[in-house]
Length: 323
Image (cartoon, rainbow, N blue to C red; front, side, top):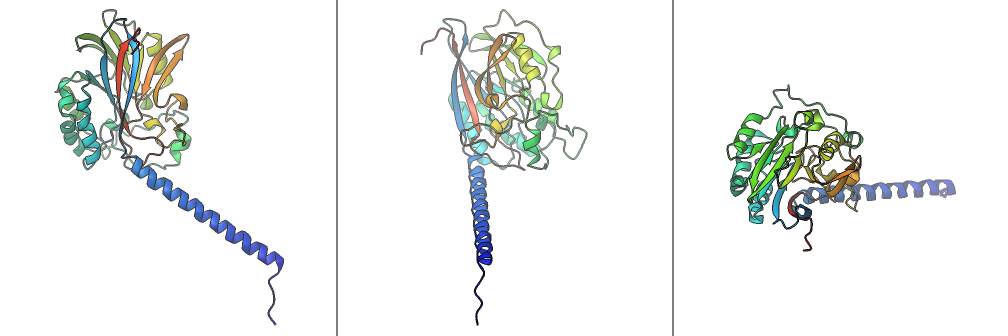
């Protein structure tokens, strides 16, 4: 005589089957998101913004902002995108750091920059201009990323060291200015542009006090430049009167919600300021700020989700423009 399964046994079997189906669906969804993130990491785009900070009646100044290339020598698509940026015909190039992930990427990067190197340019360094990326627990980024806690720099580890001096000298040999804790004025499209930069605040290399002070009253416009947009740097630049600050480092969150909202910022600013154009306020003063989502990723986390890699063309226009 065949014994029929008890009602309890049927319920357990049904529950187990449902749980397996749910787990399978979850794994399938996760796999599809990962696949999409790997594809999106190569979906480069150019963002364009007009920022009204020039004196009334002034002609425009076109600033190309690149950041966080994290280049590997084999990344042909990123190198092609970088080479094509010269077609935008900017007046000034600003790079906010983390250029390469390996020494062998310096030469192809310089080749891809090509005509851009003949333009006025400035650059600052991020921590990954000093040391190569290394493996970290990817989940750790989620809880560290919201704290802005300094990461170990690894500058004393010869196995991770990058040829920082070679990278700096290669860029400087074409006339670009190394802006870490430097204040300078360049001639750009027939105008005087003041540029003040800091070292990477994420690893404590920023020394803004060394360059702090009033703006150059003889300049047509003044720009603040930094790698990691930490509040202490942003507040100091706003207090000194800079109308626009350029930064990178955050990768725009790299993994965002479907709305594009970053989940973490990897520094101490809030997600609403972690990418794109926004206003930064401090003690009654304010400045425009553009935080680049960057072009690259760590080779150990080569994905982006709802956060495409980018370069930005920022057109500075007169404050009275109506275009």
